[in-house]
Image (tube, rainbow, N blue to C red; front, side, top):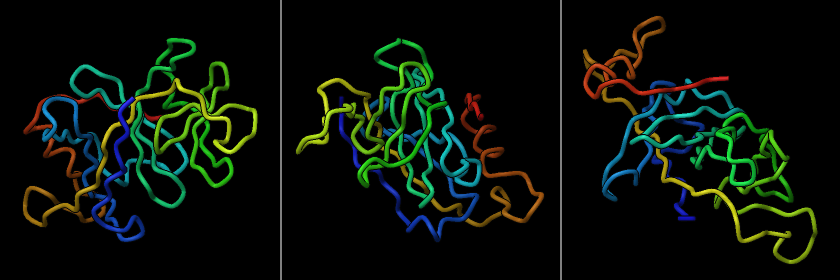
Length: 168
């Protein structure tokens, strides 16, 4: 597991729906890949992005904070984390896998056990986390933001090739 802090360059409450959500660290450490618009993410629900051949679950919580974790459930081996149930456990943002109901910290990817304790019952296994950020769109003819206009992702897709985005 790699622990990457969530990178949001603007307070979530101020992010424009056309802000570009990017995942980092999939190639060299400086590479960022655009995966969707901030407004495409429904608070409390996940999506799967295919980045550099890897399935990554991307979440936006109710406060607008972004998280990115491997989509592969380490217990079942199924690619289902993006379909998990989000919430909080003792103030910690978590996602629960739909397969065997294992719960993972959205910030660190660490599996949270059912037993209490000082560490909240955290276990050694978990999900790899990915750096994620939201970048405001630059106003201009290629990034319209008027309602009903094509999204920033339309322009990005034309420039960078196909990207897979699964929504629930």
